[in-house]
Length: 245
Image 1 (cartoon, rainbow, N blue to C red):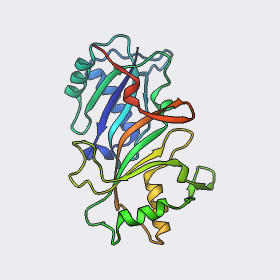
Image 2 (image 1 turned 135 degrees about the horizontal axis):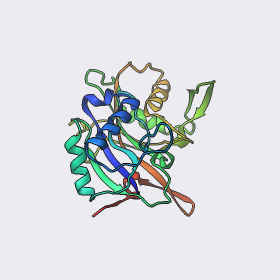
Image 3 (image 1 turned 45 degrees about the vertical axis):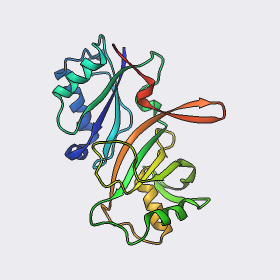
Image 4 (image 1 turned 30 degrees about the vertical axis):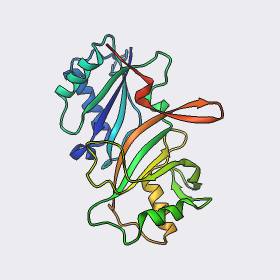
């Protein structure tokens, strides 16, 4: 049985790297007595796949990990067991059964929402909303993107699917100050745009240098894609599963 777990990563644990998160979840499912499947062979490991690893220092309100289990209790009981064995900052939000033919979380990712605000003491000396509107009115937004082997010039404008100001969603872990920009950006193995790269391009447009550590970034949600005619519809990874009753 394929299971998708949605969780948060906030507070001090946002500074924990991906490999340590992987090891943490391996221990968490054992402590919660989840009947997880193991691979065969000389060195068996838990069947577990994260959707899109967070960068160190970035918080997450809608993170995902897929596992395979032999048997499962109800979603409600599983969430309670996992949260009872978890630590502050990592809260399990849902535990859902996936269709057998669905791609794993990592392969499903197509887009993500990010909330970008300035840290206290780093507020800009210009109107963020006015200047960001001018920036987004550009027909082409070029930026140099470094890969392991080379540096390429990329037009990131088509990879910015939506943007808006402020954060009107009810996320309890987000700071009280809602001033900032929400960006829906391309994500996944084919196209992947980081919010920090968008703001690097923004500051180059302003002919300014972005102060180091100025931005506080939270990933709000991760989406898969559904093709509906000529238009692509983004669907929360959580909505691909069903609660177990």
